[in-house]
Length: 327
Image (tube, rainbow, N blue to C red; front, side, top):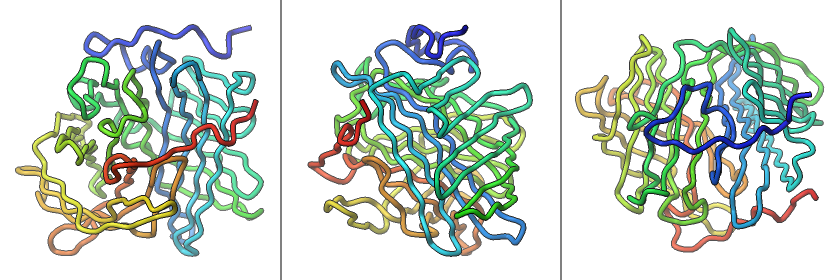
């Protein structure tokens, strides 16, 4: 019987392996498998979803954290579930799948991925095609996490444009949906709770089938990213200007940016505004939202997921990672 969690592989930043080889667990690293999607049902109603399995390396602890979200933009209702375990009994991480018990599965297949979520009040069963394939972000997959030190890095790749079809179930009603998913695999030995390594992350998904990934560290005035063309070609993008235009204070008194202006010289329409389509939500210790991407004319030209960590805008913060740990 194959092992549910094979032996960790070495963390290699510059001389790393293929997308397939770097899918699994790495030595001395925190890492995550992260899918976010924008979906429409047969009536055109808008939904977004998130499925994340996070493995943390913190002191002598190695918790696994499952985060699941589904948002209905017509009703404004956000559903979120979080599970934390210090045991590996419910965890499976192989070269073809990651699984957290019966609650969530991401499985790689020759033609794409399958994402399955089972919760009492919502579920997902989605088929994701690989689309235009995977990309290495930033400097050939290497991302400095806000602090220019050898161990403050992650290795990062994505499937940024995955045509998606399947079903979602909300409160017992099953809906057929279609749309696009962005899948990330990222991780490294960086200090997870160090404020200097906290980020504002953006995945811009333009309606013309081009994408931009922006990884910004406003507290250090550092940024990196990737521009992905329609044909699947991609290049490093780190000469953009990104500025917060509004802010929101959420539970616990934490402050987050809540709107941005973006300038990407000599690319596409160059200037954009990023504005939330709905108030965001706290997931574990970070704030997440789906935004619209607007050209200077005011036209909606794409969607953008934003993931915002507390260290970017708050001098002090407390994240109770293990408060509800299952033992």
